[in-house]
Image: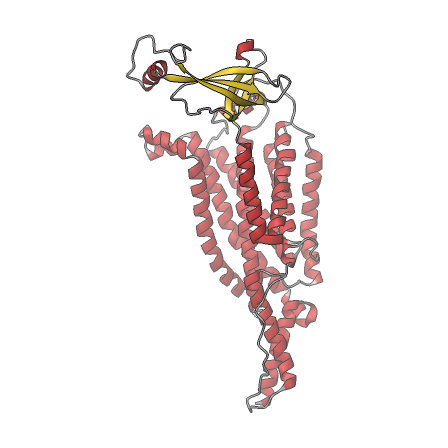
Length: 481
């Protein structure tokens, strides 16, 4: 399994080794011995350069490549056959409901803005009781007596391009409009003509595209070819998500099966594209696969035991209303698997690289010594990654947590609600998979590089070339004594 597209095949800058001629204990220069020692020193310098520059790993033996291929080729074939069988051919058509995201939208632009009295345009009504003690009553009173804005919006896309309509903006509205601003408008064909269009959001495409461009440039400038391949892998991952996973779920396929197949395809494409078709990458793939299976098993058990329906907000309710055959709890589990994949890739690749670099630095280390050394690196990684994952989920659910805090709910009540329980299960199941991936991947990598040592020592691998001459040099020194 030689590398085809490898981010590891980049040039690596290493510090030049100073020329020297080793001497034997008697003080005489031994040119024959120097050649052996120079080979050992060069190999050690080479490995140290790789440990800093993450250069190409030493190739493993042909026999070991065959063993790895015997495991991964059937798995990859099953993944892509599964994609071919479940390929949806696009999302199924449905009749627009006009609710939430399921609305017809067009682009628009604010061409004029005028100030008007809110009372004259009947912007808001005070409650019939005249009670302004509630937040709603006070807001309505302020809107009625304040100064509103009357925006003239022109439709800039679709069959009625050029048509204008009016939008009233109240003074306390969270979204204020300005002249020249581009907006997103909703179109309701069944409504009266004067009410067919309304502003539902602002057009943010330009700043988002600019930010994406800055991100891409930063990745390529810092990561160079490795960064470029990472961006390509990111595009492919989004392609699998939008062209296969989402439409297949909407077509009624089992969400868990679709997520496992789609996540496996993303894993294979992204890892091999960025890190090369090497034994080291293959070990990372195996570690990621074992961890994904564990996440799927734990997620299935605890989503069922916690009676999580997966239908907890307006968006999931709309999906269930449009496609009642979708298994919403299965959709929740699919989200857990896909959400964990990105961090899993990072952990497994890091651990595999750590084992390989440790082996190159000291080819005499056995599997146990390699495992113990690499697992110390993994423990630091676990602490940082789990903390990152928990804080990421907490940050995403921060508005919800604020609502519970305002309601003065106890921690037990908050955790028991389905909205928060979903995030707890998602976080803990993903974290368990991440924690398990470290020892699993480390053990696999240590076994692979150690199993290859006897073959490499005979001259078949780079590790043997590094270790063999060094042992020969020590033997000659003992004979001279």
